[in-house]
Amino acid sequence: MEDRLPVMKQHKPRSRSSRKLLLFLFLFFITLLLILFFQSSLSKITEVTISGQALVAEEQIRKAAAVNPGDHFFSVSTDGIAGQIKALRMIESVEVKKRFPGRIEIQVQEYPKVAYQFGENGQIEALLADGSVVPVTMQGAKLDMPILSGWAKDDPLKVELCRAMAGLDPSLFSDVSEIKPSPSQSFPDRIKMYTRTQFEVVTTIEFLPQKMPNMETFIAKLRDNNITSGVLTMLLADSHAPFPAQETSGAKKATDTSGKSTGKTNTSSQGSKEEKAPPKE
Image 1 (cartoon, one colour):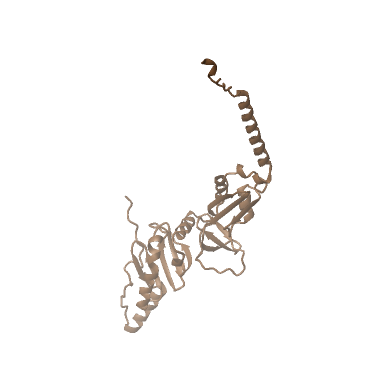
Image 2 (cartoon, one colour; image 1 turned 90 degrees about the vertical axis):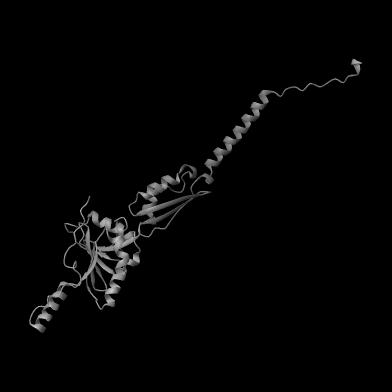
């Protein structure tokens, strides 16, 4: 009976050496392909595009980015490029994208213009939100923003003013033609703004975000009452007073008519007096 049983074939275990050989060949070809890839043009940067700039020269941005066609595509960091460009004073934000194969896209956003000033040589200069100064090279440029005059070159309050203006809607300053510093003991950051509608506005840099949205309405109410000029004091409280020349001529006219002064007071009890800042706790 034993002679009738089929003989079972024994499977020989696969040689370990053959498995190692296959693994070695696989790794060899993968390494070879990687070497060929990194030596090919597919792994190189072929184009660097820059967009969004208007005031900063493109060459200045390229120099700050420090990335050029021919550099390894996978060795550059988008965060690193953005950080280097963001270090430029006039740049507010940067977005860098890598597009395979070989394309680097750089999108910059500059700080907005908030005002103008005249430089030492009389050249028109634009002031940005961070206080940066950019020469205006365009001939016949329209000065559609307030002109800052009387400010020292490195006055930190001028930088604060630019930042405050940048945080407000530009349309709020459409009637403002000029802004001058007018510091006082109570308000070191006090300023005077001159409007195209013949008003002088006294306020502070700190009060700008609170007062500017109401200035147009304030002037409109005065015009409804046939008041077309004067000094608007917008400090702790809002008030109106005529210009000093108007006060003098008004008093003289009253004296000529009645033979004595009428003693007419200002339109506001606070118009001729500087308000005092509240004591700090």
